[in-house]
Length: 203
Image 1 (tube, rainbow, N blue to C red):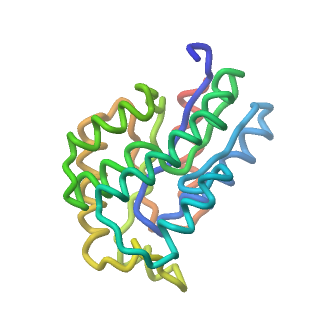
Image 2: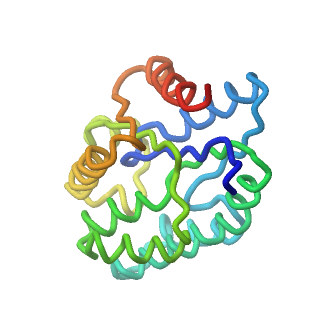
């Protein structure tokens, strides 16, 4: 995998615009003749789709640690089935969420323990780390106002404020990998910053 051009992840709280920006980025890179694989969590594989139903919509009650393990299963399948093969081919991978999501959501905001989750994610990913992580930063009140229907995680009130704070701290601790982008602006303006950050890594 050492010859991969770039493993890019988009992170941020729910409603920050990850899917919109990932779609735009995929299109822009393809137009520039790059080979791109676009995936997302949870749900980027057949197994992931089933896990997404459980995690987001089933209304099942399970602990925060169990939630970490379900996301971990989805992530490992995505690595084995999508991300790993794409990187081995030398393809750019654009992923909506990766291990940092588990650290921010369940490790910090969910109270499972940041280092506990980091250790688990290192085992799950076998040390695979994004080359570039774009944090689409936005206030939860603004992001959730964009969504007509809230899933189980989004309905946790102040939970997303804790997630946002965790993301910002994590990004500040690793500035060589993370780029923080103001996601409260129009999508076209956000994308200018997204493309600029990616272009700086590619050329």
